[in-house]
Image: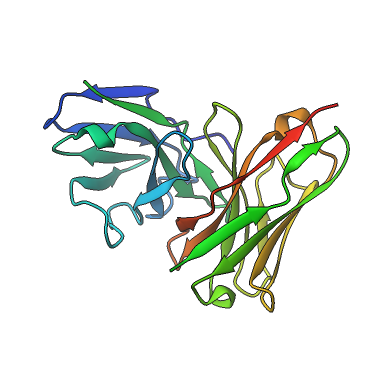
Length: 110
Length: 119
């Protein structure tokens, strides 16, 4: 159960768009459309942003969007804002009926 | 609204056991799968275990399989994690989380409880 691979850090200026990748295998990201994304501010619990690749829970800004191609999922944050500065984690369901998180990406707003 | 409150964390010696609890309120607990997730200090999130809504199906991460047991008591709206043979690398904040039905995602989280394994 190796962690999904994410870039360690991504940065952007306010108003720009950034994309975070999440690479897995045919046994997780590539197997199902059960990929989710979480935002975590320091000292806080994670918050669900996206589930089932591209679905947004009620109350989550439409600046957050998700997609998937093959074994790689992506989270795009458009119109970057200062409050978007946080850690972001992807997660996928696996063929073993377990879940696995990504390595995490620190987003910096310049 | 949904509320999840973990408890039971603390300092424990290597090799000893600890039981975490998660008290749920604000939703129909018995109809949702529940999870445990942990985060070591300064590290990323690690998925640990899931239990189905009725407690019949349980799955674990390889890192805790055979040492940790997830369970639930729907009559008490409570989730548990029994942790045995604890190691230093089990030191982390432990979160419980509620399932998004049929999506294997986690839409509500507790605030976490800190477990420190140290002699």
